[in-house]
Image 1 (tube, rainbow, N blue to C red):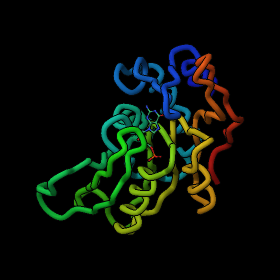
Image 2: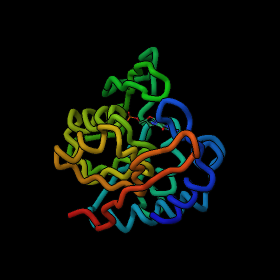
Image 3: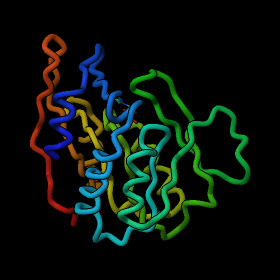
Length: 199
Ligand code: 5GP
């Protein structure tokens, strides 16, 4: 998605440890107009799939997933990062390793909100090693929900997440795929991405 690539190029910062900082429009300050364009693009890619729920993970996925929820006209659920499992009722759980924080979180989703037969679109801001997405996939599988699409804003193509999901034939589309980043100059190089609606 050209608009997103341009924005990453102009406002993104290449940080040590292969981290791309996009705090000024995505991870801290948010640009709702950009999120709206991203949501429209996800609707173009997945809108024909009879999706009835969107699932994301706190916290950075929530803003963009909410905008997508308006186009798909479906509820948006976010997996909560929980230290103590004291949320009421029964929950699905998955272990998610954080690439940026270098720790492991248990993420939970109440069994009230994902059910057998649901047709789910997963959304997140970044795809790096794939731990966050694999956690959400595990939760959907446990619930008996179908994964109809995986919409990522920024995939870091030099990490393993994209490969892990594609080799399982999951319907993944990333709006921008970073091929490499030069920490010296701050230049971000993009890979061509698949912009066709999923099958
Ligand atoms: P994964 O689970 O695929 O390894 O990492 C995805 C999660 O880590 C995302 O939810 C995102 O919050 C965070 N993340 C991974 N890489 C980056 C990065 O380069 N920049 C930022 N801002 N977040 C990242």
